[in-house]
Structures are given as structure tokens and as C-alpha cells.
Length: 296
Ligand SMILES: Nc1ncnc2c1ncn2[C@@H]1O[C@H](COP(=O)(O)OP(=O)(O)OP(=O)(O)O)[C@@H](O)[C@H]1O
Ligand SMILES: [Mg+2]
Image (cartoon, rainbow, N blue to C red; front, side, top):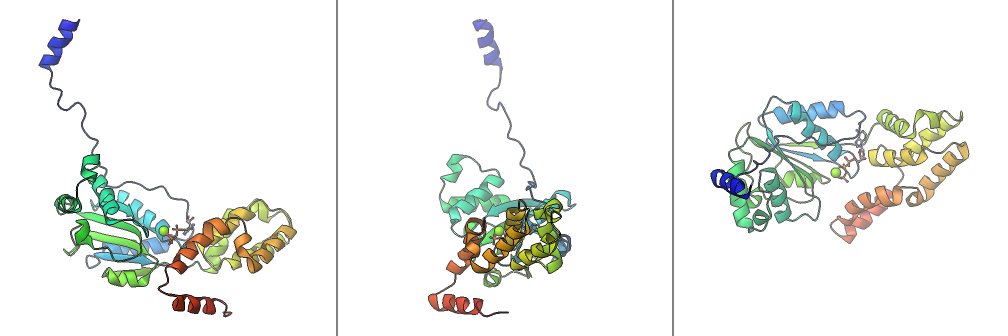
């Protein structure tokens, strides 16, 4: 048997035993069901199809739904007749240029460790070589400052109807600094949308336990001021409450010491505080606090 195996081995060609799986053109990103996103999604999708829009920025406050909208745009490319190659990178505040290059590299087929250890200039050359031959859309989620595409190796999207760059940011200024052809503001929800989302999270059963609860629930939802992140967090926390007293206590807590409310301290406030920490200096910060206490 050994002789037979040796003979077979000598006749075989084993340089490539398995081929790499082809890289998917678009990777679907899981999303939660959304409320009232269709019109915004349609608008952004239409703008993205415009050949004069090569760089698009979505801006808006923390927790307003930029990433959620972004994921839905990404998934729209799955059914799009345009054969765009879609690259998705989460940037966030502390992501280095090297990490961004690694994420892009992975998407275009440079996933091995040796490539990740190459120096920045070599990575620039590799990324540029691949992307300049592709019709691609680059999604950069959550950028906090201008990203110099040339330093990453991404060909500048300046040819009509070819590469596109779409990004999200909390800052309108960043949209300007990225020279966005189109800036779209993602706004807080209208009251109708807020109430719909809040009802969904609390659940119809919890709302119908007592005749006073729907009215008290409206007061709680109004405290969220149309911010989806707050509506979801508070709605989920209230889903198990069954008495009007618990709802009244929630209103009191939200008005007087919202950070003690379940989920607010760890899921909502850190996100909002991140924006406050990013204000340029103490003077701006104190102006912001002064304005916060002025009743609207
Ligand atoms: N239209 C919507 N319908 C239902 N839920 C939504 C909607 N928009 C946002 N959400 C929910 O609100 C929360 C915050 O949304 P998201 O993470 O997209 O905000 P963001 O603007 O990207 O915030 P950040 O600036 O912190 O990145 C998520 O839990 C998301 O599922
Ligand atoms: Mg986000």
C-alpha cells in the first residue's frame, strides 16, 4: 500500500489543493426591522444613482439611525442591476489608517497575515491596483474627521458614474471636509413615527393591561424627543411594566434623573456623551450646557 501511495503521489499535482472561495460582490448585513425608513432610503438610493453624486455624506446626531440606514443601503445593492463591488468599513473615532487598510484589504482578497504586516505604502499600492480596476462603492461608517483616500490607497471617485464613496458622521463639518457632493441629514423621528416605534417595543399586550397606560406611555415616549435609540431602550425597559404606578414612576425618573433609568446609563448616555466630549473646547461645552437648560 505504501508503494502504491508513493506512486500515486508522484503522479499527482498538489500545488493547489483547494481554491479560494470567490469574493462576494456584496455581503448582506443583518438589520433589525425598521419603522418609517422607506422614504429616506428611497431618497438616498435615488441620489446615489445620480452620476454627479460621487461622494455622499449622511450626518446626524448619535443614535438617530445613520448606521441603520447605511446597512439598508448596503443591502439594496444585493438586488441592484449595477454590478457594484461593495466595501463596508466601520471607522469610528479611534480606528487607525492601518486598520482601515486591513479591512479594505480583506474585502479585496488580501486576508493573510503577511499582507497585514506590509508597510503602509505597499498596502496603498496593492489597494490602488485592485480598486482602480473595479467599479466599487466604499461605505465608511462613523467617521469623525476627514479621511485622506489617497493615503489609504482608494482611487479618488472623480470619474462620472464610476466609484462612489458614502460615509456617515455625526458632524456636518466633516461632510464639507470630505467634499461631499451630496449631504443628507438623518433627523429625529416625527411624533407619529416615534409613537409607532415605541408601541412596537413596549408591545400591545403591555399597553392594554390598564386603561390609563396608553396615555402614560405617550408621555414617556415624548420624553425621548424622537431619538430612535432612546425610544428603543426605554420601550424595551417598559415592556414588562403592568401597573400605571410603574409608568408614572418612569415619567418622574426620566424628568428628574434619566441616567438612573434602566439602559439609559449604559446604552444611551455614553453615545450622547461621546459627542459632548468631542466639542472643541470648554467654552463651546459650557455654551452647549447653558442652551440645554433653556426651555424650548
Ligand atoms: N427607522 C428605524 N426604525 C427602527 N429602529 C431604528 C430606526 N433607526 C434607528 N433605529 C434603531 O436605533 C438605534 C440607533 O441607531 P443607529 O445605530 O443606526 O444610530 P447612529 O445614528 O448610527 O448612531 P451613532 O452616531 O452612535 O453611530 C439602533 O438600535 C437602531 O436599530
Ligand atoms: Mg452609527
